[in-house]
Length: 119
Image (tube, rainbow, N blue to C red; front, side):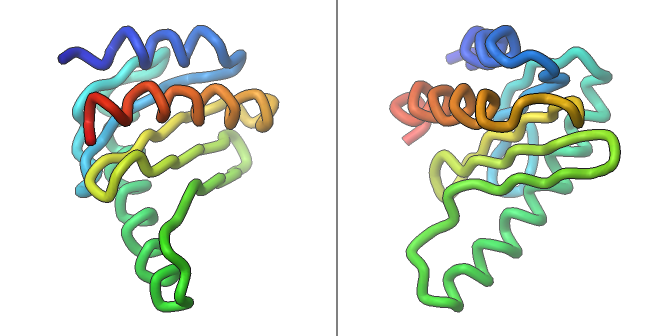
């Protein structure tokens, strides 16, 4: 199945969205939609996959069941990382000034749409 229509829909719903990628547990792209260079988005996906893996380990050591989402804010961008299953996650790259609550709502809805196809 192509996940691109779902990812494109997410991009259209969030002002300031620069890219969205569905990646596996290693951070390798399964599908993506972007306004930026595809390779650059894939590198972001790989790096955030490492962050997700490390934070999952920390959360489990603290006795929590699982990590729900990560928000990373830098000088220029915001990154949303939402695990879908233990093997797949969604990464969304936003312009720094994007409305976080709107992006999170849309990303959570996207995860709900992707879950049945991936699980």
